[in-house]
Length: 397
Image 1 (tube, one colour):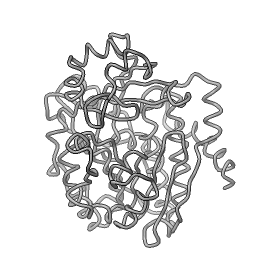
Image 2: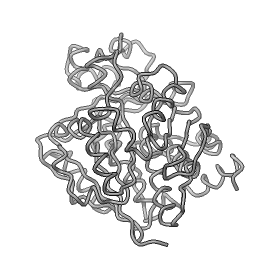
Image 3: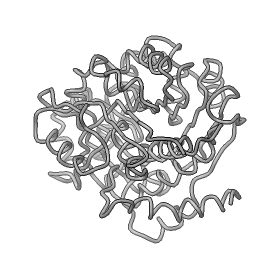
Image 4: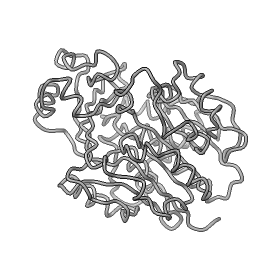
C-alpha cells in the first residue's frame, strides 16, 4: 500500500434549485421549448443560460418557472455542479486516512455562497481553495420529469454562471498541478478555465498527474455556432493530455463534431485520449482504453446499467435523475484512487465503470446530486451490495 494520495478538482460548483414532477410534454412547457439548436429554449437533457432563456421566453425566469412548474418555490435546494458533486461522492466513499480531497472554485458573497461553505464544512474535503469572490453564486434551476423517456426520467438545466465568469487559471496554485489526480469537472460553466484547458492539462501532465476531464453541456459554444464542433481549450491538443475522458452521448458528438458515436470515439483515439467513457442515460455506456495509457488496454465495448438498481427503483419511491452523471464520475474517481492505492501496475477501466454505474444509479433514490450521510461510510455501505450484485450481473465475481 502507498502513502496518502491527493485528489484536486477544479470546476463547476453551484446551488441547485430542484423542481420535481415537471411535465416536458404539457402545453405550458411547449411554449418555452427550443425550436432550433442554441436558440435559448428548453430541451430535455440539455442546459441553457438563464439570460438566454429569458430572452427566448420574453420574461423573467422567476415568473416563467411558476407557469411551467405550477410552483412558487423549488421542491429542494441542494449543492450541485459537475466539479464539486463528484468530489463529494468520492470523498464519502474514500478513507480520509488514505486520500486528501481538495476543491478549487468560487462562489459569491451571498446566502447561496454561505450555504455551500457551511454545508460542505463537515465533509471530508478541503475548501481552502474555494473562494467567495463575486456578488452572486452560480446556480441552476433544475426541471425534472420522472416520467419522461418511458419512465427513466430526464432533466433540464437553466444555469447562471454568475461569479464563475471571474474564476481564472491564476487561482490554481502549484499544489493543484502536483496532485496525484487532477480533475477538470464541468469547466464549460467556468469559462476562463475551460478556454485554457489545453495549457492546464499540459502543465498537470508535465508534473506527472493523472488527468480526468468530465464534461457538461457547453451552451456558450453551442450558441456561438451550432454548426461547429465545441472546442475543449484552445485546440485539439488538449485531448492527448487526458488520461480519462468521461462524457455523455450528446457532448461526445458535439465535441468531436461527428454524428455517430463510433466516429466520436475514432476522434478521441486519433487525438490521443488514453481512455474514454461515454454515458447515455439509461442505455449502455461505451468505453475503451488505449495500450500505452494508465489503464490496461481495452477494446471498445459496452456495459449495461444495474439490473438491481433498476428493479429496486420500480419498487420504491425514487428521487430524481439529478446528479446521476456527477455521481457516476465520483464513483469512477473513487475506483481510480482505490486502485492507485493498491499499487496496481495497470488500472482496470471496467472496474472503475462498475463503481460509476452503481454510484450514478443510486443517485436516483434521492433528490438532488449531493447525498448527506447520517454517519461516515453510510453511502459506501449502501452501495456495496449493488456493486456486488452488478459484478454477478456481468459475470465478474
